[in-house]
Image (cartoon, rainbow over all chains, first blue to last red; front, side, top):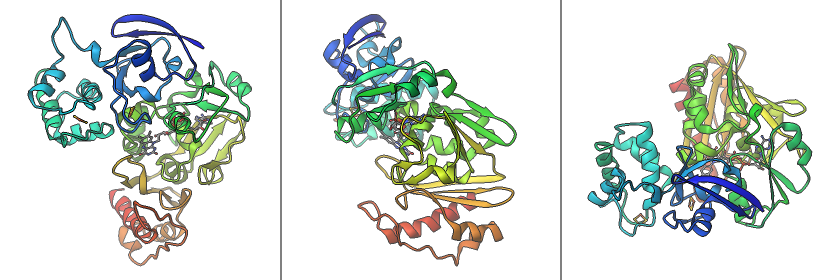
Amino acid sequence: MKKVNLEVNGKKVSKEVADHTVLSVFLREVLNLTGTHVGCDTSQCGACVVHVDGKSIKSCTALAADLDGSKVTTIEGLVKNGKMHPMQEAFKKEHGLQCGFCTPGMVMSAIDLLNHKKNPSDKEIRDWLEGNICRCTGYQNIVAAVKEAATKM
Amino acid sequence: MKTFNYHSTKDVKEATKLASSSSAFLAGGMTTLPSMKLGLASYKDIIDIKRIKKLSGIKVSGKTVTIGATTKHAEVAHSKEVKKAIPSLAALAEGIGDPQVRNRGTIGGSIANNDPSADYPSACIALNATIHTNNRKVSADKFFTGMFETSLKKGELIEAVEFQVPEKSCYKKYPNPASRYAIVGVYVAKHKSAVNVAVTGAKSCVYNDQNISGALSKSFSSSALDNVKISSSGMNSDVHASADYRANMVKIFAKKAVEAC
Ligand SMILES: Cc1cc2nc3c(=O)[nH]c(=O)nc-3n(C[C@H](O)[C@H](O)[C@H](O)COP(=O)(O)OP(=O)(O)OC[C@H]3O[C@@H](n4cnc5c(N)ncnc54)[C@H](O)[C@@H]3O)c2cc1C
Ligand code: FES
Ligand code: FES
């Protein structure tokens, strides 16, 4: 067992977990933050993307113990004063989701892109979302949503 | 995933001392963790080396670029110094997988794993790299020994990879549309004394194509390759591409790389 100290969505948490606990399991099963989805569980699909110390990573492929001392932001941490994040608003407005399974990862990944690049082109958005797979939308509206969010962020 | 003992280590000595026949070093974990989940590998001890300061960072001198083993692909891709000294190396790093893989995956993990379609092994061969481990220096042509095989001994730790700055170079790959691993990738580097043409993805292990490099040594132009024949013998054949297709791609991507040099 390992003691893991993290700051998750602004709150300090300290939990004792088995050594092989990955961050996605820590978030979903220990903290009950089930907004982070697990699709493939082997770092291919991007449904589990969260931010660790400001960078997007796949939470199914990082050990919680390895991230001890880090700041983690999940989809649940985006709402401010009851208002959705501009990226979430944009996904809603542009119909950037259907079933919603890939959406938390898409949103977290896209926010990381806009943190790097203010006004990405369609190609830059598509290249960036390379690691996020969507089986519903055909991506068109996801790209539109990221472009829309870029005008608001 | 089967459980294991996780060790976070602070220096090379501590990490290598913990190593045994049932341990693995953990860098980005992008290969190790999925393969443990899939039951392809299991270890008693996982030795995390990411907090060893000495293993991370980029140093550029006039003739060489040295990259610490735990330096992430994103750091190499965005490094102003690497972009200036060997632009093709930064571009190779930018083309690996996706942003989240690049935010975690490391150069040391990539070359230790020696996936037949990984990108970095081709850079090591093309740029006459020297691999620095905790107890020796190995040249790249002696390091990659076969499919997922290297000359690393059990418990030997890669500390850094030192690349030679070429006169000019370019890496071109035909990526697998899902993973971005190379179906075929060709890294051409023109050094003062010789031209290297490292090919990845085509065979079970990265190699320096002597036919292409021989032709380019005489005349460094894509037309010099018009009459070079690439044999498909020993080439991979799978759902992505047949051996003949790969052989053709090697030539096409070598030409593309030369043209973009
Ligand atoms: C979805 C996906 C897409 C990918 N696409 C590409 C691609 O397009 N091109 C490409 O080249 N790669 C690709 N990769 C591989 C990735 O870039 C990593 O480089 C690779 O997974 C290994 O690096 P790591 O740091 O994660 O190593 P780890 O998984 O931590 O380790 C891998 C192996 O190397 C050993 N090891 C690690 N560091 C050292 C060291 N310093 N000394 C000795 N042994 C060590 C470990 O013990 C282990 O056996 C992809 C991976 C994923 C998951
Ligand atoms: S669940 Fe993590 S990448 Fe698919
Ligand atoms: S909305 Fe269903 S997978 Fe993307």
